Amino acid sequence: MMKVGFEVVHGNSNMIINRSSMHETWDYSNLVSLPPPIPSIQFPIKPSPNENQQNETCDWVDNIAKHLSVNVDEDLPQQTANDDNHNNSLLLLSNNNPSSIHDPNFNPIRKNTFWKTPFDPCTNIDPPSTNNFGLHQIQSNTSNLDHNIIINHNSSSSNNNNNNIHDQGLNLITLLMECAVAISVDNLVDAQRMLLELTQLASPYKASCAERVVAYFAKAMNSRVMNSFLGVCSPLIIDHKSIHSSFHVFNNVSPFIKFAHFTSNQAILEAVNRCQCIHIIDLDIMQGLQWPAFFHILATRFEGPPEVTMTGIGASMDLLVETGKQLSNFARRLGMPLKFHPVVAKFGEIDASMVQIRSCETVAVHWLQHSMYDSTGPDWMTLRLIKELEPRIITLVEQDVNNGGSFLDRFVGSLHYYSTIFDSLGAYLEIDDPNRHNVEHGVLSREINNILGIGGPSRSGEEKFIRQWRNELISRNNWFVQVPMSANSMAQAQLILNMFSPPHGYSLAHVDGTLRLGWKDTSLYTASAWTCNAFS
Image (cartoon, rainbow, N blue to C red):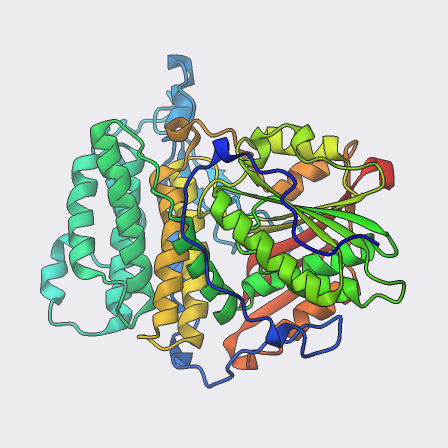
């Protein structure tokens, strides 16, 4: 009989990135209180503290952005003089909501309609100066908005006595967009002036979701402007223990992370049914919160528990070892054999031999994507390594936000995305709830910083896909085949949402074999499953 317990099979101490203190001990009591396959999840159900403000911020963003035309060539590859027409094209943001949760053609990269460039020799329009082009365009194209929505920030002093939170939030978002345009055309002086005004007016502790969003976006954009002045791109300091703690809170106060965990678990369970040797590769395991419920179901199978090997990838050996011990202790209580391989590296930068897969093992790869830090390295190398491992099942959960393209593309996409998440948190948690601030500061602010302050191919040299990963997998149909998410996965997701009272606005959709979880009609996370062609 195989010994049940924890065994570090691979751990390279020379690859340690950050040595952090151990994370807190888990409480598994509520995970085993219910029979499989549904683990116990408890959310406090209470009336929404801000029902009148639900979804207001992202609606404002759409209302303002659809009137916005701007120059977008920042962060794009340098082009020749013959390509000036492309360098100075004007972008008109689509009036349609690009992230409808029910749209089968949804892509978080907004579909753009280009106007005729003013540099076209066929026109009689004089080219505007480089320094004021972006601001001129945004101001001229927002002039038709209702005066209660848009006011010029230069005349904001006349409204100092206006205490209406609604108008203040709209004004701040408008000013934030003007600042983004200035940054996109390297008008850093004007951008810095507007950021100073934004940081004085917006606070992450205010009642309005709009002000909280603007405060965090202004912080990220200020970091970008300072780096641009200095000519450097400073990466964020990563405190993995703090990140994991905030991520844990995020998992507790909203359905998004549990949605990712339990829909993926269901897809893996269906793929490894009756397999006796299972090897799970988690591309960014963190605290391993997903796996106790999964182990509980495996251990209670009719044919008995399988032999499980888990490769957990992360950036800190201390945290990986602690996670392995926690999972091992839980598996031991269930009577299930478990081996844990900690690998301190980015998945796309390791060699396939480091994963140590045996011929008898059925391989499952799981990846919950996020923007808190780069967990995988170059995307094309990550994709190639997944292909080499030939997993039976790949579960992928993606944020429906645009992390690629120009700065302005990333700004508009992320502003809409995070405004929606802030609205969802604001509708469920009180203004001064410490958990709300923990999530906004420890998770969302870091993601905004990475997307705006650090991200961009010309700034970081990252080799990242412009499209969503699921679109890349579809395009490589000679390598991978999509596995439709089953009705059982849909049921798992619905059970999670049932823990929240209906007025809170979370929405679930089953579209083209994927599961989408959103707030109101905006898709925020998409779960999909794939297999290698050899198993199709």
